[in-house]
Figure 1 (tube, one colour):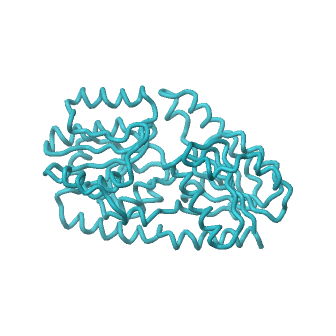
Figure 2 (cartoon, one colour):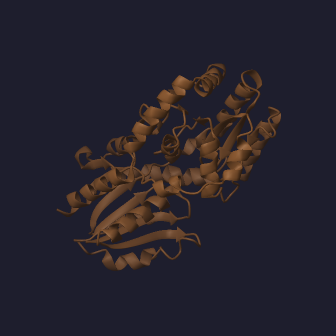
Figure 3 (tube, helix red, strand yellow):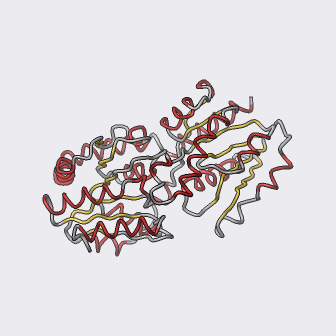
Amino acid sequence: MRIHQICARLQFGDAVTNQVLHIHRLLLSWGHESHVYASSSDEAMAPVNEGLKAYRRYLGSKEDVLLFHYSVYDDNHRLYLETRNRRVFIYHNITPPELLESFDTHLATFCRRGRELLPKLARCDLALGDSEYNRLELVEAGFPEERTGVLPIFLDVEKLEGDHNRRLVEELSDGPANLLFVGRLVPSKGVEDLIDLFAVYHHYVNVRSRLLVVGTSWSTDYTLELANRVRRYGLQGRVLIPGGKTGVSDEDLYAYYRAAHLFLTCSLHEGFCVPLVESMYFRLPILARRAAAIPYTLGDAGVTFRELDLPLLAETVEEMIVNDSLREALGARAERRFREFEPARTEEKLRGFLERVSS
């Protein structure tokens, strides 16, 4: 079988890119002919990207399968509408524009256009969300429910089990409680709320604590706003924001997970949220805002909240850190929930979906 994948951009370290690459490697290992095309790519991904023009030769092939990854508005959707391939639409969700426009009106406009276009892309053989939340959004947008399913994000367990920065773990194991957030520094992730919560926790509950905000910066203005917030609270040296525009290495990332006492997120929007599942692997207690895909991904492997009651949440953080029996119970639940995202299970789902569209 000849299978094509199209996405907006191939970029090293990006979650959608990682999904495309994992599927590409699997397809090749299963003996299929596999091709990857993107509107753009960074230097690291350029060798993988065949370019959209290369796909045009296959537009009329009715026996081919196209996996179209949708995460932001892109003109490449015209190829999806034009193709005679069997179409599999893979939805990674699009951030609601109102969560971004105060810092980036250009990106907010692309997100708005992407959401407005979604109902016009409903004619396909199969539509997959990488979470149940995303699948339900597809149904709401007009995709026939009987032709929808869930294909979770593939996890790179070898990386999770691999080398980590042992020196960094030692440096962070100097006594203070380490609260960890992993994700892009964007307004939709609620990083301001995260700092507000940590300020209450640090000043009124546990002064021997630090907040680790690990991810890539997205907007200079937003990053400055976060830095100003840290200064206003007098948290310099207590809130660490490593990464910058390129992010941290895998060795450092998994060191932060190993040194953490709690994973904490106030994110307002997630299509899947890989860091939740990575935290499950490390048996970390998880406290997360009950928003978008978070409850669907998390299951019973953590504690969620709706209202940003800072004093109550600060006390909850402390209880989840110091209560050994609670930590053990949450760790056991995390371990069970992680098994549901093991790559072998996701591989079988992908194989089943491909058989379904090719039969």
